[in-house]
Image (cartoon, rainbow, N blue to C red):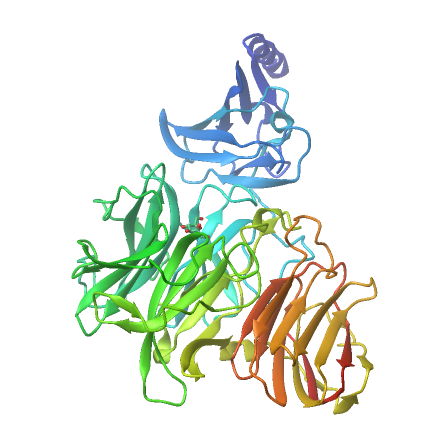
Length: 602
Ligand code: FRU
């Protein structure tokens, strides 16, 4: 009888154009036919009704498909709007739509721009589980990456009560840019991160672009002493600044009910960085506005007064300025402190695409003045170091920076699927002086040392022509550190290659005629996902007899650091298998490797 009734109902529904799906995940143990109902309405529009007793609606994604727009509807109200590249011909992966919180409701979705013939209608399913365990060989072992979905800029980094918070530009509905949320992770040591639920989600003012957090110790905003206050850009057809606050150490955020707090008629008006300026007793906000930085001040984090702008005629201008930071740093070996304005630029980096430039100078609470307007200074000489900003409220007076380890030229196309992008290792910042100029030195934060396993020392040896060290580590999995001390005995070029049995290699060398350090990733592995990935990057060095090089190698990246902090160079690489050999080559004379130490990193 029951069966008959069901069959009748099914036929009835079919007659009115309702498709009842029985492709239900076995983990959901109730009547399949009631789970997903699909009505195609013509011209790419469909209504999908789901039973909210399952935790997730799993949507099949095909990255080469155009975006469909989804309106999630509960009790006739839209509760979420987002875009998904729904599978038309094949399924690359699934993304979860979290249905929890609506347990006794029926949830509907209005899908726009998806043809009736698309594969997604057959493949979407309800489930109580979403498997986010790693299935990617390039996923870093010790760099932060999202469990699934797309990540770009690090956002709102703040330290409070023994925890480092990392928020980040996040798309939970696909591994390409879109639907910007603030993702969240927490660490006690800057190295081991615990994924947290999404911190801030899009709303009627727009998606959630980059920004910063502060700890409002003195309750200047009135949300509560010690509130973590987040500033972000609400991005729609216009960009404006909004705020949200957390009274439970970043676990949940409440948006300020009078958002936005700052608007403009300028198109590019974003990425608020807020900090407390002791001398003037005010909060300062730095904003990226087209190709300049604007500065505002506030007594209470809510009301902002324009102070000044910086940019014209200063530094690189071949692209838009983004993600500013303004920090005061000590100058190594002196009692001096200077201000540094960090300015990310895209495109217009030294090797194409995005990069981080900075200016050194003074700041009086109103205006930043660059002490060397004729010079353009780069924070990192690789191609994959962008959106760099620093931790707010870091302990022991430290200034710790983090960069997004990619480049807008190809970030959406790198060969991973489950997730896309990772961050650099955290780096401690300090200033140093060279030839009368002040430069920024960024070196791996001391916490990175904790990753080191047992050291393998390969001794001292002279390189007249070529010398090979094999293997790097007997059983390594592509995550290691190499520290090398070079002593030059008259060579023009001191080079090393990291390579594997597939013939893939990354070549690095000191050119002592031109005083440069260079990394060549043209034969490093997969490069064909982008015309501009196969590149050579180069940093200026000072003439010297001895150099120390520190290489942090992970499954898809190499970060090279000068032992004295004179340069950093961050490049992605996608080798088929880990580089497990090193070869040294000398040209124009010989050199000595006075020390070579390899550490597995775990
Ligand atoms: C930098 C950036 C920011 C913006 C964000 C959007 O990579 O373009 O300016 O806030 O990404 O995701």
